[in-house]
Image (cartoon, rainbow, N blue to C red):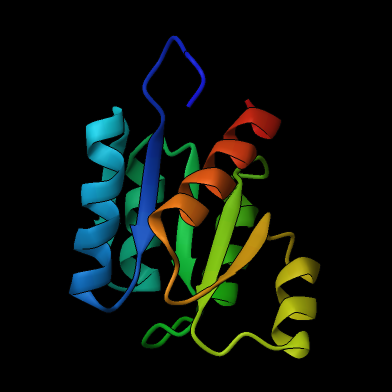
Length: 127
């Protein structure tokens, strides 16, 4: 991670608590502020009340999908890199994600090195 003046904050949204916890354990030791959400609605509530620099969203969430959540985040925060994650990564999903202006789509399970690399690239590009 490059040196920065302020600690970056990441919103991690996944309906699987184990994935949220493993992502939390990956980022906190590196100085990130982490917010965890189990649904798209919870993610939107957090994004409205906190200063978020990047969002990691699972595609398959209860009620609002990751792509729907991304669209709603874009309505209030135009500049926010969003990385989507999905266990069933296909061309249709990739097209929909890119049309919604996702920074990247990662296939689950994601490795710590892979997610850290993509998050670092996104933060460097946007900030």
